[in-house]
Length: 272
Image (cartoon, rainbow, N blue to C red):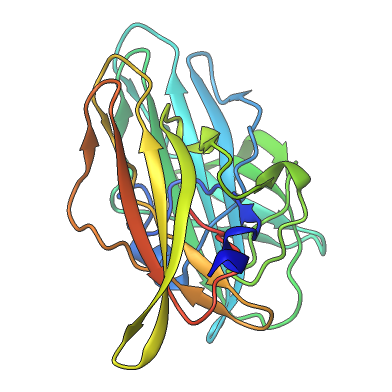
């Protein structure tokens, strides 16, 4: 099994992913994720800043699934309501799609705090959809005809995630086996390192087990984000499953190992 230890560990480090409460169930079902690019921050109004953490553009059975994860930060000293703006994705052909907010999105953000908002929509399109930007639109329904005001327009600075089979081209998102890394898009200080990969069998089905060491370098307790890991062979992608169930909390200056099995042959780890 030594040959597997030399494979590249791809940190297509994803934003709030899979089972995370910040992501709607439809994201989890589709295995959605986006590479962890440090996004610039934009002013939505005088006190709220937003970052486009990730954009989903994935073909599914019913068409195309579009989604976005937005980090919103309250820079003021008091509780501030999240504006009822529509979040839209713009495409290269000039079409705009209004995404539906998750039921778990918070209505307000505490002073000097950040929260994540998620949006999702499945459209009946099977052709290529190229997302070019994200915009916030204030829609006044109390006038006729309704009035729309664009509050913020953010161009796409990265590549939208198109599903688990997306090739990871960013050299900075590929790590050597045993190399430590962080997940900046999750705003978490935890440090991860793949430490072991072994093959086992489950009812005669080969299962590769990946062990990842997680370290908490801070002086405070840190919760392990809800993570997922896929295995990619030369021709297929196989969803991993976390062995440990339930919340995992690391005490200050402590480390722990979580294990994720995937089958049949793992050559790259591509989700978090």
